Image (cartoon, rainbow, N blue to C red; front, side, top):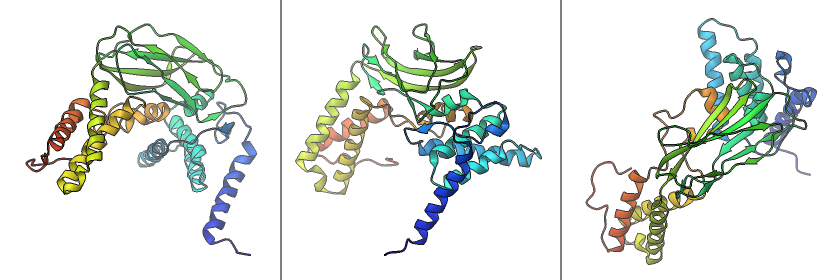
Length: 330
């Protein structure tokens, strides 16, 4: 009989540690009392996003370091950060993310409660990034974990379609949030002019205070879907013709066309966006930023499509469109 290796033993010990940490309070409810803040309730139905967990880890560690540098003590924060680290070491990313979120919320003076459970669980996305005016857009809320009880806090959800100037297209309605469950909404865009819109999600308390918010970009353009399909067709022609085999510059140009065509084709069916716009509403809210300079958007039609079309047309005409180009081509 083969004995387990050290890696297997260490992994098993980590899982055992996580169970020891969570077992005493697996059914305890999160309240305003600090002694409940290390408890975890409910069961997971989806994985936490690694980018969210990484950002939450950096933010919570940074908060602790800033407090220490200023000579301050945050006795309620440090145990949460340390517990999150233990949970991560035990490969429990979901629980670690929740603990980091609690630590950062407490650091910012926000008392944990059912609002934080809802904010930690519900992830917000659109069904696409690019659409023609007149299409019905479907924003979605997807929980990563659920509670086996109704929410105690009086909470509501507001979904708002914002025009290019950031103003609501219509007066949004509040939807009461009683349980953590998947929800889908419908936003009509009939009669809207082309432009860069956004769909905003807000979690609101009984006093109309916005607890958590996030916005997802939406491009409405009557011609863009056809331009993307045309580029996709050109990309397929290049592949069938074996143009990439003509040389390194041809291969690089073909790869560029294929990448842009695939990205934008996917944006017709998925909410492709930059790093910040893919963060959960809780992470983005606690981080306190919207669109920092270091977040590069993966969908900028005016930047990407003219180049891809130029390369595709040149390659299909038998030319090597990168041969005469100079400078930074990234």
